[in-house]
Length: 283
Ligand code: PAJ
Image 1 (cartoon, rainbow, N blue to C red):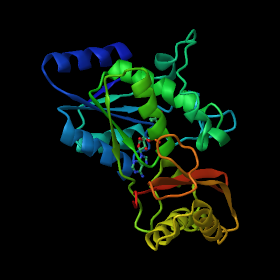
Image 2 (cartoon, rainbow, N blue to C red; image 1 turned 90 degrees about the vertical axis):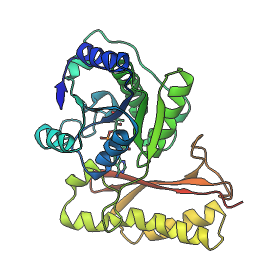
Image 3 (spheres, rainbow, N blue to C red; image 1 turned 120 degrees about the horizontal axis):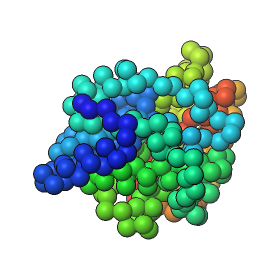
Image 4 (cartoon, protein in one colour; image 1 turned 180 degrees about the vertical axis):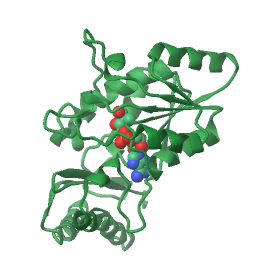
């Protein structure tokens, strides 16, 4: 696997792959890789000829009081994991390479960026869409792989890809969980042993909604109330939001019969965790 830190060199590699008739599968990440990330790499390996993974802790998507400085960075173990998955190229740019001092252009999906996590993380999705647009231009992928774990990010990147005519197919992969249900996340590393146990309440609240929905409860307000009751079982965890929305517009729905995205975000100590569940249409 080749580690590439220059954007121009990355683009040259992608162009030569395309000239050779090869398709490119791209997995953007911020590193501190776990099985969730690797599931995307495997999907890329299955679907494309050349697999490019990026690791870039993107300062533009962190708020001023957020964890940019302490975000886990582990290039050595990450690159060994990617090597073991037969990735072809690791794009690992510096902040200066991605954001030269005079950079002054942003990509924003206006309305969607204000919904769900966008409400409590102002500017977050502007940072995500700007870096993903730049990465798409640099890597020139045919397919780009994203995890359902970040459901709002999926909706926003899909919208950006359409609105800006990126010639990239977005492939969404299911959430990979720990044995006790906790969604895998690089941020789980911040949790103490006690917090790690408490954190399972997020997935338990979603499971509760899922079983009530299966029993025929279609009213979103009733489902949210039941989920909030489960969340209250861990009083030290501070709920940020629990919402039932359309997976594409991220607007609340009052009835889940046409399918819905059930999304939760909560603070476990100072660590913000998110999780979600896609309910299928029951009509
Ligand atoms: P990061 O949090 O590193 O996640 C990279 C990709 O891995 C995202 O598409 C995310 O949804 C996926 N992922 C994370 N945990 C997962 C899990 N448990 N199961 C399945 N997929 C999972 O998301 C970002 O980085 C950044 O915002 C990025 C898109 C790289 C832009 O900076």
